Image: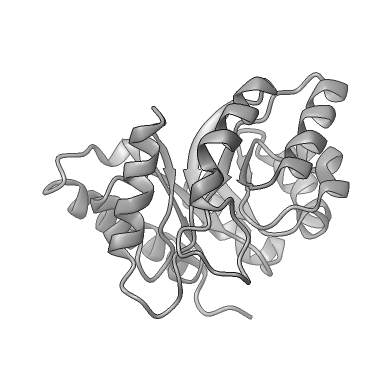
Amino acid sequence: MENAATRLAEVRGNIARVCKPARRRPEDVTLIAVSKTKGADAIKPLIDAGQRVFGENRVQEAQGKWPALREAHPDIELHLIGQLQSNKADEAVALFDVIHSLDRPSLLAALAKAMERQGRRVPCFVQVNIGDEAQKGGCPIAELPAFLDAVRAADIPLAGLMCIPPADIEPAPFFALLAKLAADHGLEGLSMGMSGDYETAVMLGATHVRVGTALFGARG
């Protein structure tokens, strides 16, 4: 408990510290605790320490552990931050409160149908392939304006833009580019920044940071 509480306080403290020079309010940054690969025994101490927003990469893994945890803590907010297969759209809409990886027309169509069927509108971030990497998911920058129009036309709540910058390269230019793209399209939400670079992301406007290792320790 103490370990989890200490780590949580440290991350929150770092967010508050970098908000000052950026003239931002810490409460405008949502800290998403990335609990992928972690069992309930590792998650509970963070819940006990006051964390209420969690992120998972895979629908199936989340289905295995979150229903029971949310029954005990109904105020928890669950975010899907990993790639989503179109055939899992129904399950994702039923389980998650926010989806961060909407990136292609086929997934848009599947999510729109799932939301219509369930009468549930789940806010979605559009994932942008900010580094133009062939192996990564994300909407190509050139296709972003048309895709955002399609999301709006489908009546899916648009939460903002999300990115994962290329590994082992200074992330700041990619975060700055995502912030510019969001501003150009009238979007305020910016899901960017992980354990190694969330402070940089906050300085450049992140509204949601996805932090795992800094809260849970090395992945096991």
